[in-house]
Image (cartoon, rainbow, N blue to C red; front, side, top):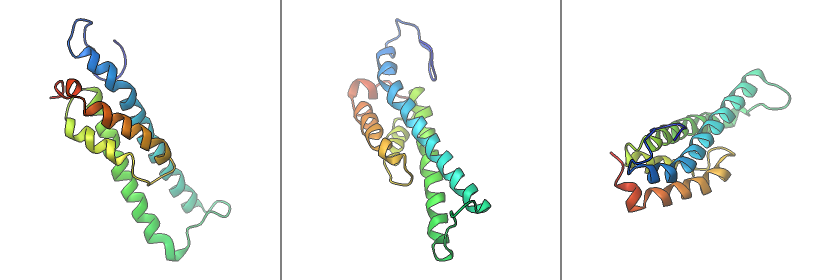
Length: 132
């Protein structure tokens, strides 16, 4: 089986679990990366003062706290996705599935169903027993 994470032989008992966790984990990873790219673009637009995109002075600190919170949350999401495809750290996978649902960037509309799918898959007892 090719792709990110563990590559196991076809007779490995973890193969069905890997086939269940890879699609939502990949989408979790993509959502985290898209949100980080969005915030990088917002910072570049603010610093270069392109067009009419300028954060007002009275909203600079909320803007900054939102950026920091989003980067931390999406960093946890990416870390969780990488751990899930390697069948490691089940708890971090649960936290990452929850953090992707936080409304910190436009991709949260996509993150809610992906996070719910990942939570559903991770809570299965057959999936959970293969995590280290």
